[in-house]
Image (cartoon, one colour):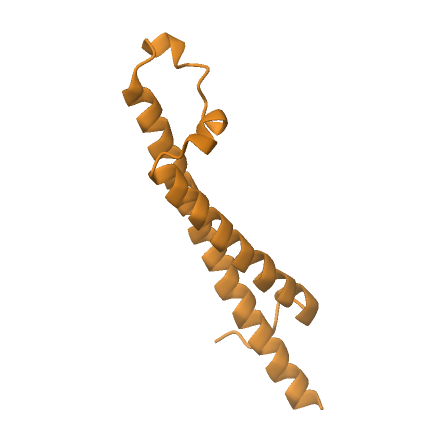
Length: 99
């Protein structure tokens, strides 16, 4: 395993905090979009809705697409969280060896 930390201790803690918040927020948004919450209707790209004849299938597809995008972004935040945790442990190990 690579034993030299890439990020410092403060940056790794910042990455952990921001990643946890990103995972929670995007997961909740993905769930709310999956159940087609009306609160997110104005966030959907509805400018093309008129060209599709105001069909509800188009709106349902847009909700599903936005939901999947939120879950993908939450997965990327999980990857950053894992990386930040590994960096924090390497920083803790490096400071323990030096002191």
